Length: 157
Image 1 (cartoon, rainbow, N blue to C red):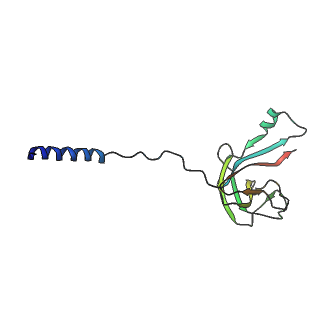
Image 2: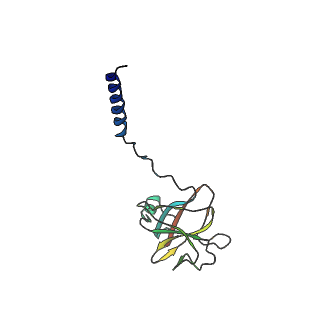
Image 3: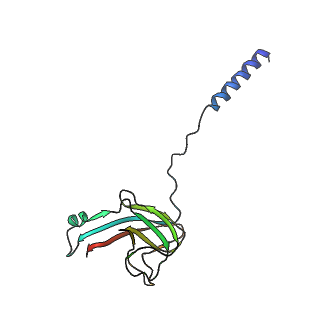
């Protein structure tokens, strides 16, 4: 092979490799994966008279989303005196702020927890379980537990 052909082939190889160096890979545009386990749900604020049973249109106007409210997941709380407390003494597992529709997600390991939502300077929880755990929620391994927190403190039902 002649020297000239070798030089031409070498320049072609260099040009091809330089063209590939300028190429950039597209970044992964997929959303981040959902937590493997935890709690996800929606916060509803119920205000007004819901008794006697009222029609759906009127009822829906009295329920608003918990947009912007903080939701906290704590180690299980037993023996609290009412649905609203000033503070929670057990360890905080995680916290989230509700989106415009009142939706939230808090990653957590499997276990029994208490969940609270911000309410007039305190923390509100829906009910108790049979063992006296306030605002109970059970997280199973490898699952997101879906819940609805209905703050009915200002509702007649």
